[in-house]
Amino acid sequence: MPRFFSVIIDLARVIIVRRDRISSDRNRVIGTFVERLNVLQAAEEVLQRMEESGYFHDVDLESLRTTIVGFLREPTRNLLGLCSYSRMHKKAQSPGERTWRILLNRDLLYSQRHELHATIYHEFLHGILGCEEGHGEKFKRFESLWPL
Ligand SMILES: [Zn+2]
Image (tube, rainbow, N blue to C red):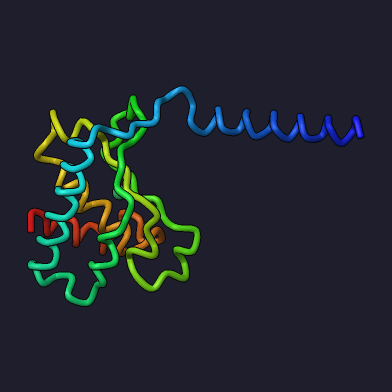
């Protein structure tokens, strides 16, 4: 029994150490109601422009409408945005299934407002093209279409 107990303590210690290393000392950012409304509104606007552009007629853009959109931890180390893939991204049938969440730099709502939509578009492209494409040729071609 005492031995089992010590194993549990060791496991807990390992988990705590790993968490510290991953999240470092930066704070999670939820954002205010208004900030969250603004960023979701911008995401909707980007999707509408993508739909109206005609470039994505063969893509299930609707599936991206339920993607989690939030803010990056701060300080953000000059990162504008991040697209994380779902655990099942390799078998995904749609961009929405492939994408777990998109995190954005909260400063985009203020000091770099004009870049907010471009960054959301960039992250949606990652969700559409997948992680193997990365910032490859196809990605660059689509990115250069902005502003749609
Ligand atoms: Zn990127």
